[in-house]
Image (cartoon, rainbow, N blue to C red; front, side, top):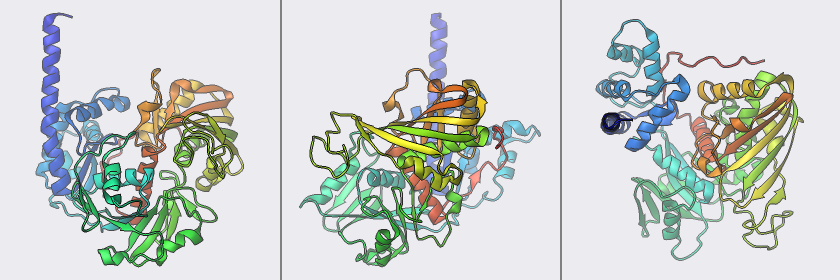
Length: 492
């Protein structure tokens, strides 16, 4: 490469940086003024850096084989700003793809006016009602769900985090809770500012005022005293798993519904978003978001079963240790879990294999499962050893799963990667429920082994918030309306 080539490449990079920087205020204006959430092929652009925007454009090559040009998206964003839109979720990558495929000679502005006709000139109008959310418990999942809800606050419509309920741990409990929200050894620092008001027992994060309520009785809290009405309580303590226990929340004034961030027992609906979230009825008062492992494997299992059929299989999870285990050897009511989590691989049980059937009834009796807890703080991997009805090859099954991750209704749940260098820490912060490691796939006619990575904390928390949005019916309209997705393999 000559000096001229190096200079030209660098100049091109600087021009792209400048375009990305110019997009940031447009994205922010659409978000705060018009309640418009923008993304590129599912990658959110809200509150992102210049580099994150550039990476989102590069990601587009996985869908179209070509990197998305900022020269194409920057003018699109400027027109969106001028259209004074109402509330919506707009994927500018797919919107640009739809324009490029329309081929009818219209200008970009005319195309956008037609495609977004229902929200043009609406001036940020948002038909959604606001739903109060209370986090009962503030552990690993509770704090990550809090981060996601704060991130999604926008103009104040949709889900509103109003309170956190905990047991008082010390005299400086509030400061310690705020510090745990601010700093996280796995997921990094909170992106924004956090203030503590000891007098009112509140934590304010990026302008979201969170009331901290101290209680050990889910049935005796008057949430209306804090201005909270018809709230959804997200129980992330795991203390109660059945309807009787979780119903205690409904006895508190100001509570309308309950969501459990764990597998439920009895007849409670276990919801895996992307699979059976359509079964949530307005009258459902208590539902569960199943487990992190169930959320990771169920969409992949559905994709395989729809295309090839699954006769039976075994699920082995290699799972990061959790707070339920002991740091050093000590008494634990569970088998083996009393042994040091930091020093041992611990063989234990998992209910995920049987829980799959609650979301996908066709898997009833088809799966067995077990788990090995290992000394890592986050990110796990599920190994799916399946016997199929139809034979396949590694290339065929990987192509199918890659298409599912890019173009299907499960693209928010399933991701796909084929890098030979990835390891567990590369998936910290993934917003997908599970990531298929294509290079590790083993296929021998009717015998298939799949390796599915998952961030058992953050990826699962994203699924919890998706279920919350379904319960509250707060999804904004999504665009483009024009079909841009390639067809995936047909359902058997």
